[in-house]
Length: 183
Image (cartoon, rainbow, N blue to C red; front, side, top):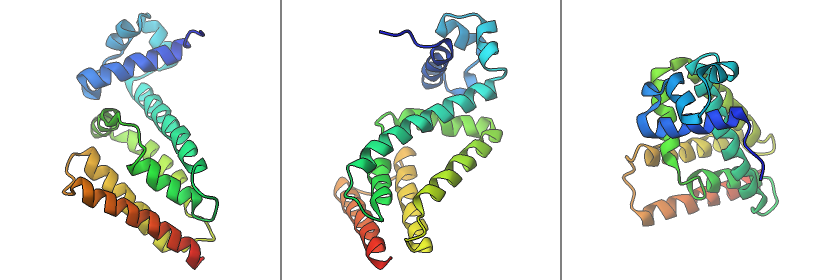
């Protein structure tokens, strides 16, 4: 078994702290203590709390992308393969640890500069999923619907029953198939 790198050890400790006390109350001192390293060790890798939060956010997104790739690979090949995989990964097979996503929302509220990272990630995501062979506007509307369902659930504000939710997801996947046929 390999030991995690010091940087990953610090990131793991920071995630635990964010889940326990929230991003606003996480300090570099507390991260160092949780990780079992010196504050200098934390500062060597992350010069500021914001830099640590940004790295945590990027790592969380990268992990999500790996899960998405696995889900996309399970979709039938075709022009809408990635789009359908995104729908399923985002609202069906997503990481059950939504607490980390909610913690990042809180972190962004306290550190608005992190929004530039979110904008960059979303720009890349939409650019990857909106294929030239698919109708642009319809594809974007479908992705916005997926995001809306995701955020309703993340914020625990979804008005939908489990049955309604299932019907919505099936409709979204069906619409992705229709987009591919229209192309």
